[in-house]
Image 1 (spheres, protein in one colour):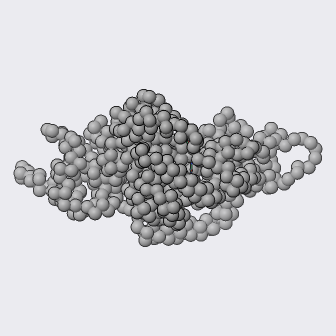
Image 2: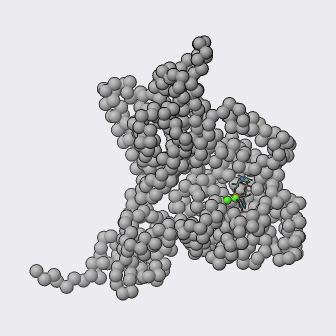
Image 3: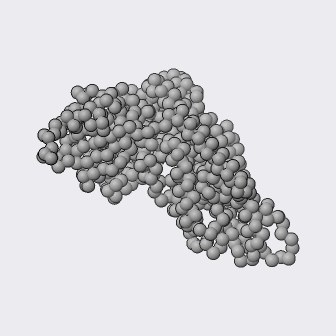
Length: 586
Ligand code: C2E
Ligand code: CA
Ligand code: CA
C-alpha cells in the first residue's frame, strides 16, 4: 500500500509535457527534459534568463498584461495560445497552462506543448476536404430540392444574394403605404486581413458568429450573406427603433473568442430606405425586382462610404453630397489633377526627445489645398487614393518632398541631426520598387538614411506579407528606420511583429488619451514601453495633449513624444520660426 519514495525530480525532468519553472521575478530556475527535447534549447541557455525573453514582443505584452496578472490574482492560467522562440529564434506555436506553486518562496510552473499549426499542405488538404464536404452537402441538398440550395449560403445558413433579392422583391411588391422598409448592408471591417492572419477556420467562426448575432437581434427579418464578408438585412418599419443601425453594429462588435484569443470585429453599415409608395394612382416607375436590386446596391454604396469614413460606423444612402460613389469618382479625378497642379503640401509636426529635452525631428503630414473647399485633411482622401492605386503617385511625391526638406533642415551644421518620419500606406509597401525609389531619393539628396523613418501600420504588414517583408528588408539594408504607427490598434496577430525588424513603435493616441484614466490602458502603455525597451525598440507616444501626460510619459521612460502639447503640425514657414526659437532656447 505504501507508495515507494518517489523521485520527484526524475519525474519532473522526465515528464513528456514541456515544463518551465520560474521564480517570483519570472527568471527561469528549472527546465525539464520534455521542454528541451521539444524545442531544441539547451538547459544552460535558459536557466537564469527571464521567461519572457522566450516570447516575441507582442506575446510579451500579452504575457505581462494578462497572463502574469492572472497568475498573480488567481494562481492559475487556463489554456492560452502563444508563440515561443526556439534556440535559432524559429517561432514555435505553443499551447500553455500555468500555475503558481505554494513553495517558499513561491514558484510558477508553465506547462506547454505543441499547438497545431497548419502547414500549406494541411491547409490545402483541409480546403480539399472542405470542398468535398461541401460537394456532399450540395448533392444531399440537391435531393431535398435544388431550389433550397440555390438560395442559401452553406456556411451561415442564411439566404444568399439571389435568395435575398427574390424575397426582397416579394416584400417590396407587398409593401403598403405605411411599410417603410430599410435595407442594410453590413460589411466586416478588415475581414480579409483577419482571415489571413488567423486562418480561414477562424474566418468561418467569425462569419457564423456574426450571422447568429444578427439573426438573434432580428429573428424575423429577411437576412442574407451577400458577399465574402458582408450581410444584408431588410428591417421592417416596426423594427426600426431609434438607433437600429447602431444596434446592428454593436451586436456584431461584441468580443468573441477565436483560437483562445479574444478579438473584436467591427463592421461598417450602409442603409437605403424604401419610402412608402405615394398614392398617386399612377403606375410605379420601376418593377419591384428593380427596386429590390437598387435598394441592395444603394445600401452597398452607403456601406462603402461608411468604410471610407473610417469604418465601424453607418451611413445612409444619399444621391447628393460628398458621399455618393459618383462623388468618389469625381474626387479621384480631382486628386489626380491636384497632383499635377501642385495643390498638395506637407505640414511637419515636431517630435520631442525626452532625454535631451530638444526637438528630435518631425513627422510629415499631407494636406490638400483645394481651390474650392479649402484645406482638406488626409483622412478625407488617403483611403480613396489608396483604393484606386493613386497613392503610389501621391506617396512618391510625399517621400521625395519630405526627404528633400529633411536634407534642407540638416544643412545647418550648428544643430544636431534632424529626423523625418514619413507615413507610408499598405499599398505602397507592396509596390515592388518602393524601396528602390526611396534609395534613389536619398542618394539624390545626399541624406543619411538613418535620418529617415518610415511609418507603417500593422495592416501594411498583414495584407501582403511576402512583398512587405521584402520591402522591409530592402529598407533595412539601406539603413532607413522602421516604425509601427498606431501601435495597438491593428488586427495583426502580435506574432507578426516578430517577423519584422522594427526600430520604433508609436503608441496610438487612443491609449495616451486614456493614460491614468483607465487601468487597462495605463497598463498597456506601461508594458509597451517596458517590453519595447527590453528588445531595443524605441517608443514614441503620439497625441500628447497635456502637461500631465508628458510628465507621466517622462516618468515611464518613454523616448519621444509628439502631440499638440508640444507642437501642432506646422507649415514650412512656421516650422522655420518654431525651430529657431526652440533650437536656440534648447
Ligand atoms: P497619423 O500618422 O496617426 O498622424 C497623426 C495625426 O494625429 C495627424 O492627423 C495629426 O495632426 C494628429 N495629431 C497630432 N498630435 C495630436 C494631438 O495631440 N491630438 C490629436 N487629437 N491629434 C493629434 P492628420 O494630419 O489629419 O493625419 C491623419 C492621418 O492621415 C495620419 O495619421 C496618417 O495615417 C495619414 N497621413 C497623413 N499624411 C500622410 C501621407 O503623406 N501618406 C499617407 N499614406 N498617410 C498620411
Ligand atoms: Ca504617422
Ligand atoms: Ca499614428
